[in-house]
Image (cartoon, rainbow, N blue to C red):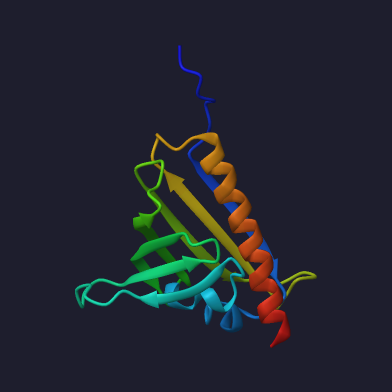
Length: 152
């Protein structure tokens, strides 16, 4: 009998950011995440990747390094999709693909703000700890994003 806790392998976190879409979207580039996410010490393009491939290395302040590959980008619909292609230390699961989507809030008390949604879909071998860690990191990054665009 397995001792693993059954868990959903998909998460979505979201926030209303009190800044217009242009201000928020400007920071939603893989190589610019260090400008708002306090857990990152740097994010930089990986040299030697093919010209058709956007690969960025995220270096976290705890020493973890992730290479993330941009899978999709839409400047029209304001979203990016990326996957983790390498990690040091190694990941404990096979794969994850994430999407960040920004939408302008056009009415109500938050009119002029931006709704940001950050989802992740993990392989079935990701355990509950991985899922909860990802949920926490996304929530924290969204708070960081709100602080940075709030200063502008």
